[in-house]
Length: 93
Image 1 (cartoon, one colour):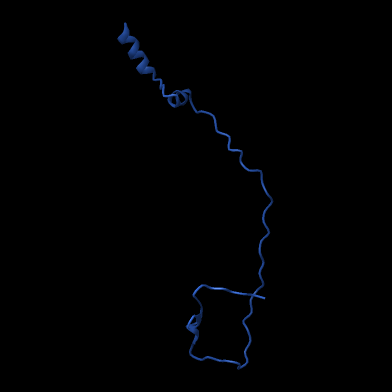
Image 2 (image 1 turned 90 degrees about the vertical axis):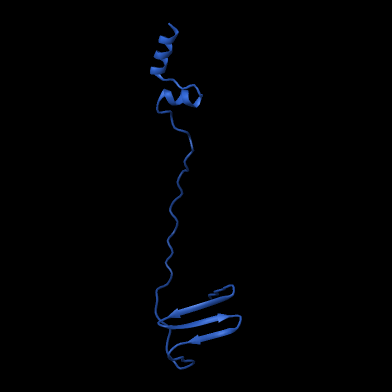
């Protein structure tokens, strides 16, 4: 059993022909429209869904380590610069 549900309209198009179903009715357009005149449905393959992969342990979200001590000082809003420290020492002498 297959049910396809659409909001206001559904259209099937192929090879320049179409079937449209909407609130106004069913519209069939094509170079030849055959109703109850034999024929057979097209062939296709059945659905082959993939199974989900095995679950994996999630990332714990631990923070990384600082790359340099200067980063720690910058985060504390006390940046350290060797050149600035040397200049400050010279100025205080």
